[in-house]
Image (spheres, rainbow, N blue to C red):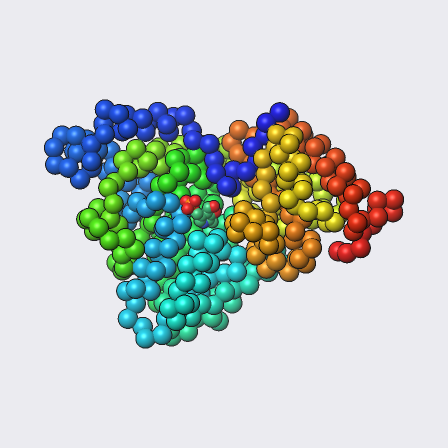
Length: 393
Ligand code: PLP
């Protein structure tokens, strides 16, 4: 059996999305900037897509800027805000659990003398909003807090954070890349100034994203070139990808409730089975304020990589807390920031369910997982199999 439980890494393209995209690779191939009929046809499709996306997130079409994905949107939001700021000293507030697209951009900005404050989450993986207001200084130009975490799925109090920033006159950006598929995003209600998204996380194509930029917010350019995207983001408009992104978001919006309900039931059942039947298994991140498709566990005394490889041999695709983000075998910065000890952090596995996940698949995964953990513990020097106890935790 093949089971794909890595939907936080990427999702399969919806066939209806592909169908909508294909004509723009073939007969409707025009450059959206050209004045002739081929160009006008492409331009119209891009305008329609912009309107669909705007409607899905309750923004104006003119507030939607197409980018190459979540990474570019995040880079642009931060670097663009810094480059137009007239403050002598520049200060940004973010969190310890952001995606590398934010954290490595912050690291780069620190080299340019931008001061960055990293808020620590609770052991449940949620940021304390009080820490945000206490960290704001007269130099603060921007705060960026992710909507939902890519490893543990915890959902942050974005509306409250945006309100605090508004009171202090600080720009607020959220990386909503992981949230778009399952959370209803209304930028007006949230009160955010900027929001990043990426189509391949909601069954759209890879290589296309959006930065929502509220009217009146100023942002420097990240990419220089032509006048596309109202002069703010240069590069020939990727019409098929844009059409695909709009279609994918439209479908995601339409089917959200029904998908969430089904996925949440399967996910909760899986969490209950793991916690009750596999000893020394710990759920990372709080259970309630969490994406419905995410289950992230540490299995003490064994390596996450070993579990991942055994599951892979059984046809099951999951992700471990380490490796993926950094290409190294360091323990995940997200899990460590929860206060989890390094050895335990190394035993972390993320299961991210999707629209196609079935109960039979989850039963199969559970059985393979239980046997895998049991087998690996038999070989672990840290675990006394006879006594069922280990030398740490
Ligand atoms: N931000 C978060 C929270 C993510 O999970 C990801 C991708 O995993 C990104 C940003 C990067 O998005 P993209 O793959 O579109 O560059």
